[in-house]
Length: 391
Image 1 (cartoon, rainbow, N blue to C red):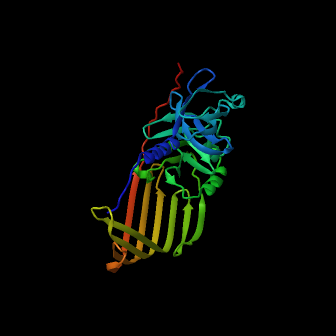
Image 2: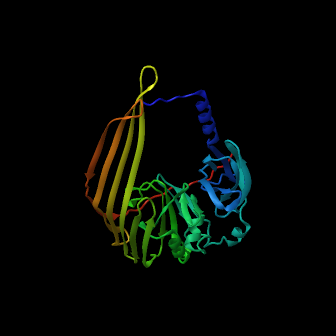
Image 3: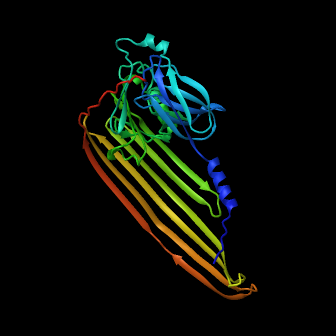
């Protein structure tokens, strides 16, 4: 059996390590010049050394309060953004839990000149699973769709990615998923006028129909269908390790006013090697080594796999949609060669005995998943959020 020793010194090291890695929080309240709460404002921590790099972010609640958790001790620039107000920036230093108290936004002077009968301020409404940013006929309509996303409450743009709660968001257009890279999506939306966008839904708890795999969703509701056309890509990779690993695949995406089609195929071949060495000492009553076991274990697995995913979304009418999907995973070969050797040595380190193992495991697995879904939407009522004064 193995001997383990636990000393007060190790306790001290563990405690110091825990203290060093302790995480803090940053909180405060966002208000305007009239001491009114500003709900749904984006509150972002930027690296002080590089003000273009987003560290973390949050969104102010209906009472204007915000909380950013798990923040390391460091210097940051805090930035608060909300449409109709000038961006607020301030350099802060986080040492332990930090309360910034009130952060005051100043209404944008240029915004006042733009407000006309046909260009109103965008509004925000909140329901159980989502927040809706209504921008139709607002001051944001003069820009492009990507600019609207960047100004949407709860959305943070970091290195070209759209984040919600500091995690990448899936983007949908009229409840249809957009299968594009972050760069392709930006190019698409920058070419689509903001005048065609009714609202943007920030869905933090997606219903089952979205198939978001637990992530958040940005759903762009438009008054005019956005046609992407065809986009395709081919990819290949090679990983150099003990044994090389290869992968090749392709993705194809096609969208029209009534069809949203996506297909991807990937082939992977790899060899995984696992090697384990172990030693076990056995002691006699006097505390001397009586016997020692030395183990060597080797496992080499050769695996080939094919994966195919297809999705077809048909817009049958303004309120009806049919979705067909298939996911196939074929693993025709996942074979493992296993061998091991255990040597039993005496107290004088002489070989007493040994035993070996040699085996082969052959495995083949296929998974098929097919899904068909027909949905008819109904009118959804949303309540307006009111701004509350700060006492």
